[in-house]
Length: 599
Ligand code: WTA
Image 1: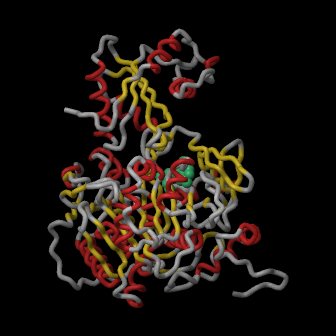
Image 2 (image 1 turned 90 degrees about the horizontal axis):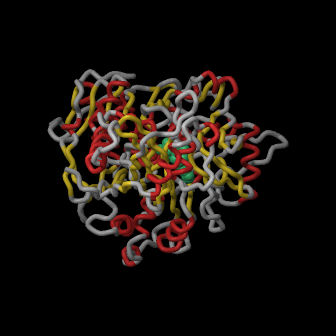
Image 3 (image 1 turned 30 degrees about the vertical axis):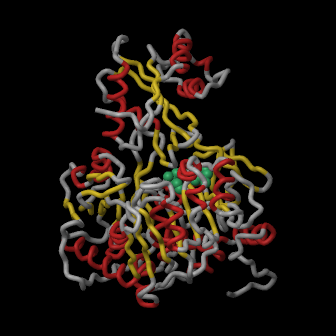
């Protein structure tokens, strides 16, 4: 590494020591492209860019994401396991070496080509957590197609919306799969006119070759839908090469990876975590990535711990909701397994409360493993904030910004003030972003000492068990019901899921049977969005508080549902007579627990 006279050599590889971090972080902000230049060499290039940034990231560079995640390791470590899969029942296990993964990817790429899929085409992926799901993503990357993964828990309508909106050319799926002892049908959910590639019944010869489509810095890797404040999910588009640089570098430094790490992340490829930190970052570095398609509590609540013991997992990355749900079970489920292989623990997707943090640290990590509470978003592609990797962490603080990323808190909102390679293209091409280079994250945050604490979303996004859903999406689904005149959905805290949805309903007729209404609401959210989206509380009210211009006063409704004594925005209500009715229905809402039996 060339060191300019007068400059110190900063140790970017240490994400452990506060003093070293502070110095290195400052240096990285002074000259971000110099920081990124050091990691450009981790990528195998067909043509190396002259510098990491000039007008755009990796300008002039030519490479391929699949080549970096598969082919180069199939050459150097062909027999090393790339993916270890665990299925629904104990003992269901598959090991896919890098060479086997290369063959699998080649096959799927060849099938895609036989359907006429070309560079730049969008390909849907609607699969459970099986090795073929990861191979399908990589197969798209290999031929320059853009993958669109849809979480297998989304309904047929949600799937259709995403496929048609993004003009997908084909979809890869299977007939069905098993989770938690139950069979779940998938293929029957595809209700639009599209080429269906069903991995259950394709028979292809073993040695199919597909050439690598070399990608340049403008080429795209995937589109993934997530929720914002509007009624419809938004497609977030990520580039191939700059995104790969960002996820690979954050993973390497923040988790402090070693080449013999066995890494287990419990997310699903249907979410951004499954893209960045199950698929791309671990395979880029040639690690072994463990995946699990079952339920953490089936047949017993020790599935994660059993897998960690059996595979000698060294880095384990999960979500606070999973931790809280496992915390409710007897400690013996954890303690009967030898978890001494663990070195680093991670948390993602929602704020982690102190009690869950403590249980994770003490019971799972045996007070030996730092907890990387990583904050980031679908839009940022990879981790933005993480605590330093040491044993002096403060529970519940997402810590420090990653090198080269300048952040600030403006009016209580976390903003990113400079350019970094992970940011999605949809935001980069937004005029308001290019003019001042600020990205408003939508999350409230405060400094606690030199660390950042995330307070949660400031917009109309609800984070249920780490799943991002818009209140407006719920409202659109509920508005479809004939008996519903008006609806407003707000977020309320939930001990297990972090947050849950609370729906205020104004029925067309006052004497409606609440039981029938509730069933219709649950059926409609399930059909429109998926089984993960269901309001837990429903309050039937005669009317909703409105402003002079007829807008529903949501903030007031949120405050009332959250039991706030002096709710805000009362002054803007033109029909204050409804407030008492709203308050009394909130005191006695209809509770629809998850196990709610439906006809
Ligand atoms: C929330 C998930 C607190 C946050 C990777 C963000 C978090 C949204 C954390 C993005 C964390 C994610 N602490 N909140 N460590 N990580 N969030 O796009 O509100 O599915 O805006 O990406 O999750 O959700 P998304």
